[in-house]
Length: 431
Image (cartoon, rainbow, N blue to C red; front, side, top):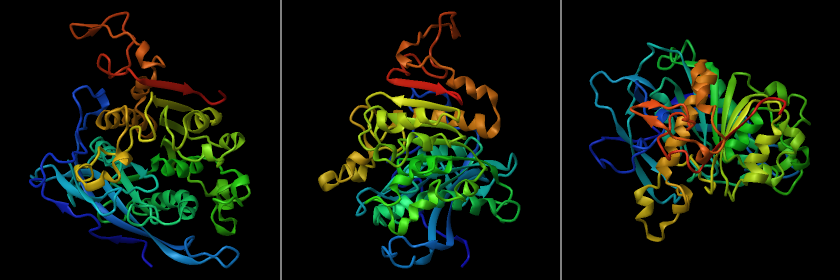
């Protein structure tokens, strides 16, 4: 079966309709500097990748033969574009946390716009959603990065989307494989695909993983799952999880060295025993961790922070939204269709009791831009956006006539008061 099937998996509707509804591209006036959109116009296309010969976890019986199937993955790809006089903008139809409701999201990308290879090939960023979720859940980051010279591929993880949600076993087994397969599939397009052949530099790839996307990402960065979990009650059948542990002698050989940096947002698993401290020492890829200190899903002290501290052989940063929960930074703002629905099923999937979603999106996109610009584009200046007083509330904002005074110690790129409630920590390899 062909691995690549171009198709219209998203319906793109005129930007004139539903104007100003469910904007995914809002940048608040108090947003940090790098949250602003870049200089490229944006295109977006739909793609289906098919992985032949994957184990079908849902239909594999415990103790029986593994069932094999061709696993389809719908992918949305954002990229720098030539609009040729077209007006920027359009809308997406996105199924929501309540699968009976489809939201209309408005953004800046133009469906099927002509790619702009002038400054390419561009680094590749892969986005991997939580369970359940879909490829539009972090579309704010996708559009932001594409406007700054990246090709961004966001995955619909089969069995793990709002409309296709199946037994959790499938997500536990497939998530690392899906991320690597999409990377390999897009890399195959380099130099040959009529649309993206001149656009993608897969040798410089970053991955953003949220929740279960972070679970898969940490494994792909070198954090093998605990061998204690192979036969646990939550594990997939037939000890399939062993493929992603050190029990598999090919585990490290299967990792993809083209992944140069990761952004793990509230990665799930540490608080449920998926890693031991010694397992996380296998991570060597630079990683930005993002979390809310009140994350009740993935945990904070026993979750994201514990991963950050245990990944001792990697250079890593931890951005903490104080008092935020599991939704810190990643999900798009609450769709009005969900807000206005009877029973408001799914509202909590997009919101935080303390923080404004758009503000969190802006802060996340600011740091994701700086992180990938440094690690994937070798822009050394971007590292200065992480050279910060750890607690944003401790910074002194002292600017007169547009010039910083000697006592100015505030977070770079933030307006006065904008860093309150945030923490940024750094640990080098060996620490």
